[in-house]
Image (cartoon, rainbow, N blue to C red; front, side, top):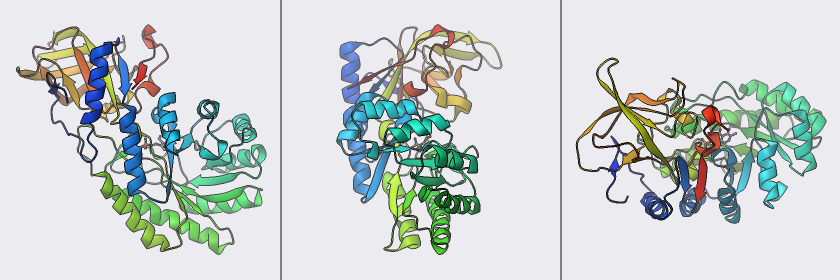
Length: 397
Ligand SMILES: Cc1ncc(COP(=O)(O)O)c(C=O)c1O
């Protein structure tokens, strides 16, 4: 990290691949360009390094980058050049990737909630891999994409995930097996099972349980004459926020052990759909202090208002789930507790109130506040123009 900056409370420096290199390059960019804030800056070298680290720890695994985490064309192009495939949530994401020259064979339409016309459009464009998790979605696929390869998303618990994705998605094991068998009768090609253990998953063993459950589905379908040869392990690999997370190798080990236990040498094709892991640590969100006010609500509270907030760049601070590492200038002086809030006229636009953050007392209006490891689910989530604030800008370097 550059000198002259003070890390926020309980910093948890990334382990494994050093994200410090990202910060140096990003700092040089910020110093040279002084871009208007709020903005996100992505270091593409770190995206590449993290992709390579993933490939090394997960050999013989197909990596489908979850574009929703950060759809910047430069990020897509960087990963495409390294050989990645892509998990896409909508025709918009499909159009972006296809428009950049990516072959349809490297695209998966992974959203389980699709418009039938959108399925037909994707199919006409050559997409041949689709997710579903309900009978009605399966019927849509049979009508709009006959003959396509389909996989069923299985429901799994999200314990240990800081950003859970359960309940809204996935069906139980029995239903999954029945739907996959039915897919075959409907003229589709059922290929396998997927799950998502929840985003920013801090417990590698979650994959172990899910793999055992998915293997049950594969075995049941096989007994009934339908061979499935794909297992999609979803996303969930973490970035480095304030709460410590295990090393990537711990995830690889838990997954490898579970795959060996369940499949021995007869493994299905394994897919991973990382989003947050690939771009989180590669990015920084720079905000500026707009206002500092002492508010006598409970105790005397120091409120620091930024030009980024819940509705422009920091939606994952909802319920204070994702606690970013912060850094500010004015290093070396005394610090005090703050409530951090965004710029809109909406009282839900509070970033951190319960989570304890301490910032330098000398921090002033106009000073930058940097959210570290903020390359995922920040710019892509920004509202179009809530309160007249434009979408947050991304710079890729
Ligand atoms: C189907 C699917 N795959 C992959 C991901 C990426 O997850 P993560 O960012 O936790 O790696 C998501 C995230 O919402 C998803 O919905």
